[in-house]
Length: 301
Ligand code: PAP
Image (tube, rainbow, N blue to C red; front, side, top):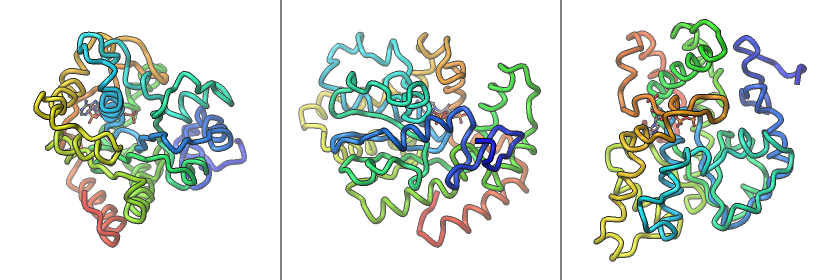
């Protein structure tokens, strides 16, 4: 690993064209070597801080809706979404080179922060479906900055200024990124292979959760029946997984998951908080890069 180029004071290493935190590199390599996707698997892919925790809760609820008719006994009331839908490279394959996946029943639901080019070959070769979530780069960056400062505080380190972190992010140096290459890699694949990759935007999901929940269920081949719709099943899932509900559950207020306090995965959950943090110049820089990277391929965020 020491031979890999590093950045951000050794907090990121360049591996196969992506920036990976050193404590997850072994997990990335093991998952690339040993994870065998099933045709029925579902993989949620995101770059960090775009709403992964939210989509994990939504996908788990959607796929298991027949199993938990009693809302009082729903697993999300007693488990973090990250415990119910683990990351391949940061949780399962980071703990063990070949983890036991037998407890996961079909359809198995996992998640990953890996860029498309870094995914295990079997994910691409199988009929396994991918749900990709992206978020506008400004809110994503602000969320990353807050999260990293929480982690720094836990480690007894000084907070870093927004300017320091902005410089790296805008140069493409961010966990599992660059942010833009990550989004572009899945956007292009989703255009070529819409049956395999469903491309979702945080902002759209936030504005019309029930519409996108319905589309997600259709993509995953478990559409809501007319009876379910009448009973309000879509709204029930939307409410269960809302920021207000999940962030107020005791299970998400204490304890740790993936080295961070569970509460740090729930900060504000809003669109447009970047306006409270970025200067005009920073905002213009991100707009310019985003335009350069996204507009020619028809992607607007
Ligand atoms: P991860 O990549 O480390 O798993 P992720 O869940 O993607 O983190 O990002 C956390 C962001 O999602 C936070 O955004 P913020 O800092 O701008 O507030 C968090 O608040 C937001 N988030 C978590 N749960 C929800 C939810 N249920 N609805 C909307 N946003 C949410």
